[in-house]
Length: 153
Image (cartoon, rainbow, N blue to C red; front, side):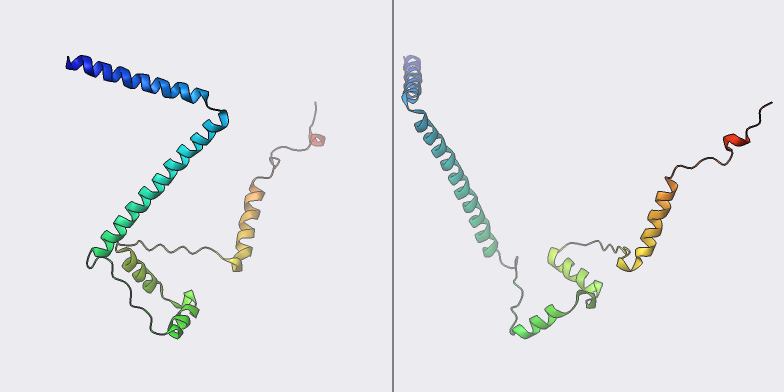
């Protein structure tokens, strides 16, 4: 008896779905387009709200954790900050920059120094290009002589 009721309920839900599908066929094409656009906008809006909620959750969790994120002390005067910002990057030692990077990421950092030739050594790069281009030129072998020197018997 219970099985028959479940089968009848399933048949009724299939009939309901069929009625909805038939009603959708009766709608104008522009109405179907609007319904589709509404479904897409609803899905995008729900994704937007979900990601915002997850972001807010993690921000609150991060803020409530003691000692995890400590803010840097605020500068009391703008003049020292402007003076340090005006300093050239070449005036700051490399060790200080690496120490600051290690402190920011809280992980070891590999120091790689690359010395590439700058604009002052244009002659060196030009000489290298000339030697490469010269090696690709077509050259006649020295063992081949001109046709005028061929002797016939």
